[in-house]
Length: 270
Image (tube, rainbow, N blue to C red):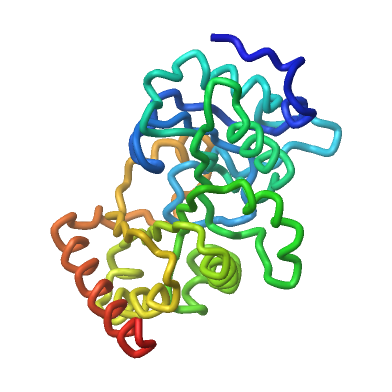
């Protein structure tokens, strides 16, 4: 099916800078989804498995990534709409909140799709968000049905070391999502020797215990599959020698986090 972009609003003409598009994603929100990877991210997480998405395009439009309009992205979705019956569109990265106008336009157009409303999901580390400038992201969040939010670590000092940026961005976005009541799934990567202590995981649970909109918690075991990309890009791999996280242990740590979350909610009378 081809979308008649002439009959749509100007949102379909908004241009974004994309790294790639995955046609049949199954782990980036509910159901089967079209997953849009934005180009550019200010974070430098030591366990990032997509370092090829870091670099932003230059001001003249050259550099990494491909320019695509909202209409072109929706055309990709409509070609396979039957497969997305219980899914929708997820925008990830890189960091999608670095392109709030494009993602907002895509999500609005998705909601207004002639063949039927498309569920929208934002996968973000919140690196660009700040409560002081929340209005910059208002249109985007207005059109967002669900958020996948990364909580890298509960330790502010470790966050700076692990990601090269303050932890406040994710915490402030978490507060804003809770205020808006946007369903949010929390993701926490469990890295041996860094984010796998019981104290760390309980602290993550206490953080999300303050947010009543949290609908799920994923503890993602660290893996080394991304190392090959660092080698190809001639980038030093920060976690060289760190072994993959045991999946069973990650599951145990998630249980600890959930207990701490329940305790925090009980303290709040929830």
